[in-house]
Image (cartoon, rainbow, N blue to C red; front, top):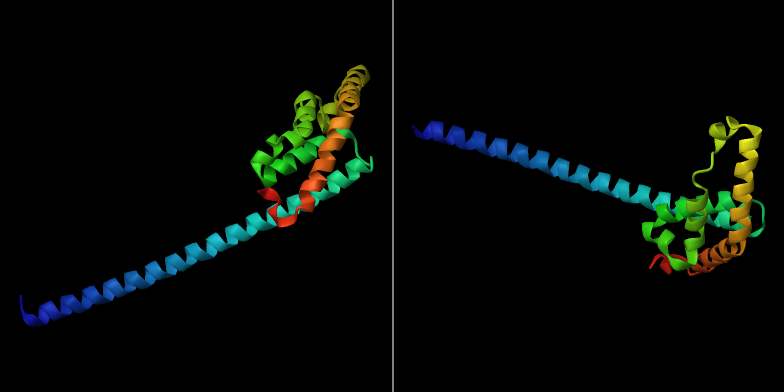
Length: 155
């Protein structure tokens, strides 16, 4: 191989390596940008869930929403914020109401029920609400106390 051919190949190799390095750098920056976006999205979702939890708990304590609906919403929001939160002893009443009422029909499925079946389900739901009222209200107050701790509340 002649010196000229070797220099040309070396130059081509350097150009290819420089191009690949520039492409790798661009990809690395894109990964960083996407990761920052994902983290920001998670932070915003968690903040929205915390705000929604505050609204639901406030409405529950002011008796503006029924026990079943509030329990379902609180359980789901706690799981979104941090899956282990719904398992905490002080918040367990939400999950208990959810477990005991999740088989009941809602929305369009409820509309399809006969009046007799709807009344039977209402009776069952109201019985659970009467039994769990104090525990759910105590869980709501525990959420308020937990939220009052501020940023360190998750740990």
